[in-house]
Length: 174
Image 1: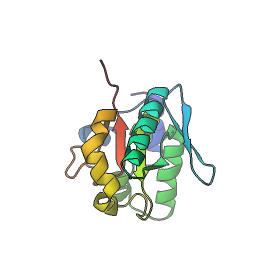
Image 2: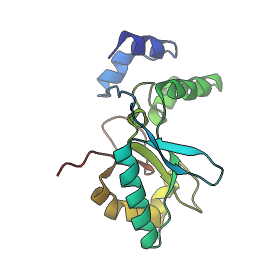
Image 3: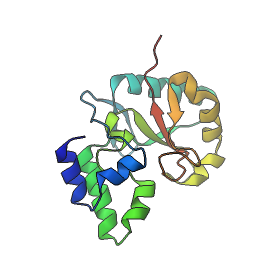
């Protein structure tokens, strides 16, 4: 971990030693990204080329089975993660509460360009209710075939709240 990353987190009142005690590790930002998808509003979602290919194959396979998967979030820079945490602090949220649902800058899988937050129509985005959808059931049964794993199941060792929408592409080796 760099001194720069420690200093950036210190501006938010985050002690990186506390993060390390939770078993969290820093993630480098992806250096090569492609647009994996654009939503109806024109927002672009970037992923690494391998993750983008896997996402598109998975999304299309789900569609063939009558299930709609949509990107809600993908690559996020360390600077953007800092903005998110800072905005929550500015709204009066407690840091301890924030760090149960948002990673500290430099510690988010989204920095890798391999993590996706997935939604589906008729389910509010980024809410636990996603686990009750056909999309989540399909992901549980099929995401592994495309190299995606659920990062934060109930009771995960990272100390994050359960996120049924957050999946990360793991490099598949032949």
